[in-house]
Length: 476
Image 1 (spheres, rainbow, N blue to C red):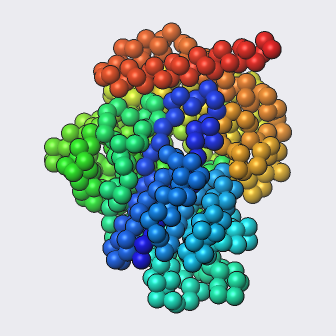
Image 2 (cartoon, rainbow, N blue to C red):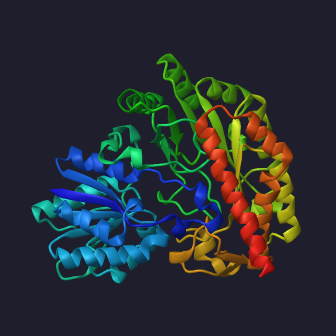
Image 3 (cartoon, rainbow, N blue to C red):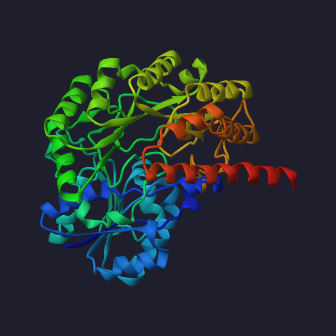
């Protein structure tokens, strides 16, 4: 069958505050590329269209231009409303087309997707690869889709049927590598500060997370962490280096360093195969030590993302981070000691947080002086504890279709802070950290390429926009 997998149309305005749109980037849809590979193995013809580059009408025309039998969308919560419009246009033009959705939105919203979109035939819950394959095969053969695990379907009479959940994929090595050939890699540009060299390719070496943070919404649905074997991971990296000229790898694992022995073996294989790459990953302070960090650096790691979140322990406890602030601080300092850069993330608007505690977090971020730092207002996404039981923690201020942790508007107000205070903390944090003379000198001293120069320029423009725009708003 002919299948189009797509991302709904969107722009930086939809997801970013005005002041940070200049540093925003677009990553290729790895999830769709995984589903595409499984469907291709099953003998189907697959196309991928990314709405990041097209208007709603252009995207509709491109999807229909492939004359598909089936179209499937990857949807996050904030794009659900526009996805419904797109599904309606597709069905109106092609009444016989089968429509399915997958991703974070349907995994959190469940049957609501089919209730709100009468054009929709199925919503895939959690991991999509094998569920999508079974759905497509059933539609191709005219079989009943009731009983296919991992999805909610509409039967021939229009009834909505919630099938049983699908078991998570236990052996991730069984999955084929993502179909990166289905997208134009030259069109994608990473966010500023997150890449050292181009071209960059994405790798997901594990799925899931063992923690249950208050604000986290997760596609996998539980605390099961599954990891690919080191050989399988490095085989994928080697393919990207040899076939696509990759010079950098972006690991999208929620916690890359969970298993020290596994990471050490990945590093050994990278060195053994003489792969000339640099790479980036995410870690927690309680999963790294000096031996591991030095081994990672030797294998090409240049930056680690640490979610510090707050300088105040009670706020970390509220977030259910399960870590001491001292541990995160020690890990970041240790990473700097061995020559690695760090990317620190922090959250404002944590339930129970005071304005003074927010200022403590700003002071800590300035002191740690990570290579790049981002500050987010806490955001309640469907499926997260903060969203499902929001009245315990504060007030949701914005509908999910217009709510994102990168937007200027504050989506959630805890009982202990006003929305204006949360917004002020975020702006003050960026000014404090990025206008610090020591930070400016550190960034200038670390420049090694024209790409880094361009990255700093993009960041400077965004920062100046923030400063002068806020001043203009205040003056008027």
